[in-house]
Image (cartoon, rainbow, N blue to C red):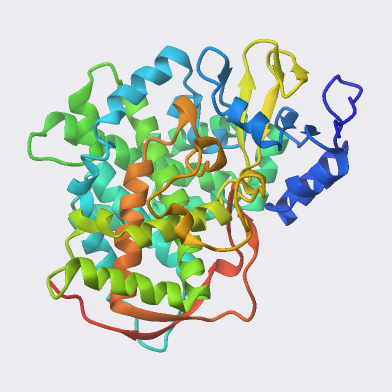
Length: 470
């Protein structure tokens, strides 16, 4: 049944902004489904700090929306703007976005990501080496640690151990304070890009007066701005070192960006690094956590992955470049991403007047595409709530039915890198350790900033661990 039209000409939907925000925060997967049952499709969601957006839930409408391109739509980024800023690739449109994607397509192409395999393996083994049998750990924290170290080395090319440790500490503190309900609330009240400007101003003062990390005051917003200043100072040093040095022997993504184009200025290069470091480490770590949760909940899945690793590598060493041969593991990862999308919705804005699924939309109307509803639609998947990796063995669903990396010209550039990293990390953990759940009941989704993560951080106990084998 079609939804009614509200006073502002948009489809009907809840009017209380705070109650709606509370509903989304409390049930990030069930939120859109409950509204669809109440209002039909489409309906309008109104949240503090961002424009109202119209949500479509029918597969035919989603298929139409996922074909929108530069000429017909652009991406709504008000949610993440306080993290990325206006120079982020997320905020670029049309020709500028196309140009940056062209520059970055080389370093992130599937044919190149294999160059980072040995680093991913080394980082993963170093973290596993710290585990003691019988110890309890939070896998979310572990995945944050692994993915951040991988990003620092593969993206920035930071090789000095002290510099890597300092950057890791700063990023951990920075994002632990940025991805909180409190900061999301501040962003909604003052505006996402306005909050970025405030943090950027504090960061500039911090760099100018050469403040020390110990000077960072524990006051919300002020502390985050000072931490950003410390991070910026190191990143600008790394960019300068890269530009002044011999890049012929470097494999990191920063060097590839600098070599690929003289059109990318200092500020844009810095913004791209923050995109990759912030977006890459947080999204991949949450995806890894959900994938490990899926494995832990079904021991037979873990056993089959271990068998597959043994079949591919035999008695020989683990070769990162061959991780793509682990087809069942890859299917497990993709089925986990289907059932546990890390974004509750992706967003577009129509450039011109349009009609979607019979609903007229004026130019400038924001649209929400709810990943949990689409990826569990009984019209698109048989037994949609059942974990079944065979859906992805030798086949792929239609692009509009599976959207963990977005779609169209805005599809995530780092998708090949992320899947490659996940293949190595999960395979290595299952080869070297036996983990058992340390929680009492199945975990639900919980907002982690603007991402959806397993509740409680996925506590596990290390039953045993083996030494790394060359």
